[in-house]
Picture 1 (cartoon, rainbow, N blue to C red):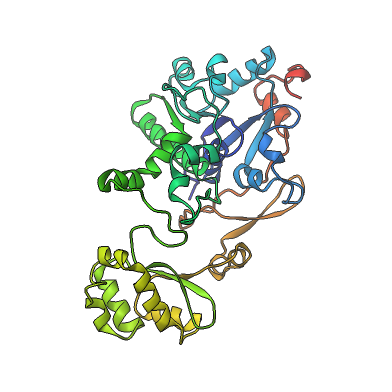
Picture 2 (picture 1 turned 90 degrees about the vertical axis):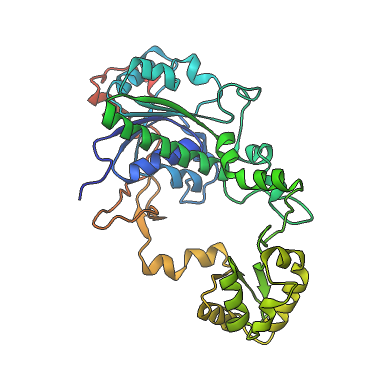
Length: 388
């Protein structure tokens, strides 16, 4: 089978995480991604760390399978080269600083007016309009503004998410919008200009906490590793000193847990525990009861009992343990990818299509493909000041 996005050309004026993540997902399935970078140092994400054979872990994650073209787009020749690329592009993505793309005529609306079949996506911190539209934004700052830190962490103090969730959410919504717009163009022949912001993406992700707080009139308490509104759901100590996790989603599972795991069906019908609201109200007593029963079993024995009762459960793995996880390696979910500093082991895309192998091409050096792409455009004599 051919790759689903073969034949598509994407030009991305991108940096950091959100836009590069969106375009890399397109690259995974056959789209040609031409990444426009600043001459010299390129995407500043390249310098976040040096742990991947001298390359940044975050850059490696979001930029394999791309062609890097170094252009000074503020120069006349650089702008001309970018314009020539756009004439043949299917998709354009940009996440420049607030207002920068519009000043250069590279905002989505302006570009679709010039190229009516183009799918163009603007990625920003807070979206167009409103008092925050010109405010710079980074992942942690949007986690703060969206209220995420207020619900994340322990009862004692809030905590940021260990992943760049605002960036990741935005990249995935941008990807979703691009695919929808391509489908729309397939039916109508018309391009689409659209925007995605980190704040709007986190607004969607914060819907459940916002609805809960609005409906209850009470703050959603931080519960560390426990679920805020479901019990039992979280960590429990076992007899060998280790903690395991499990979660109960409905009354059928609660009955099975009491019967098969705890070996005492009568607990399920106790007034303190016979519904999720009651279990939440009496969570301390419930957790003490469960851990008292678990104290006579090892973690492996508890997990086996939970499996036999069809109760979802997990170990709390370290990142080192995750990297060695049997589910990853038995299913061959890694590939070796080349880079300017040597081969790297990377995870394959999350989508599995029988008979189709995703693209896992090298991570590019800054400007590695500039000359080749300019030659394709017939711009071989472009002055070096705009491309190096």
